[in-house]
Length: 196
Figure 1 (cartoon, rainbow, N blue to C red):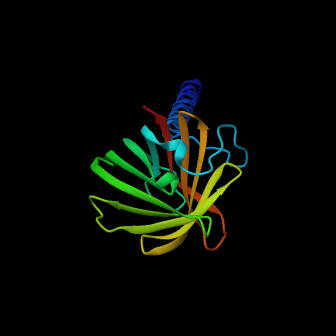
Figure 2 (figure 1 turned 45 degrees about the vertical axis):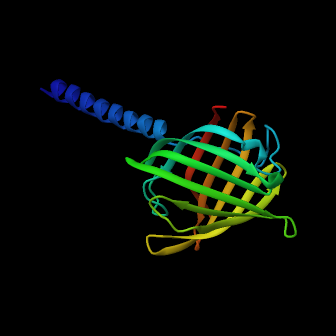
């Protein structure tokens, strides 16, 4: 009887461990790819001209932000970048499905040469109000831009980062800063793969 109970206990522990490993593997599959923004291996971004054209977009976003959970939602979209006024304006038109809802939005980026600063404004079919999001610039081939955003009734400092991995691959992430610890939590990433 002792050996039977012991065997069952070993079986039960093994099953629990296997389930836990499976859950970790599934979470890893859904987790976004991250990038090292300290070193740029690909082409240097000095503005947004390298993004001109059409791209497939793989998006990963946290289901809940700034609550310590790591459940990521994956979405696929397409976007087209147009560069206007000799590089002073970059507009991208993004469409597809976002969290089971049809999405169509436009980001307008304008450059102020006197300030050396880019300004981002966004609007979408679901949010038809042109809203400034972040401002910033490129340094050492990486674009870093700051603003604020309100989420679940709390306002956070927000950061966008852009870099090129290659001529046909770009990467972006968004993060909020914890006001208590000053640590950044990445809550959204996109991988762009050039279509044409």
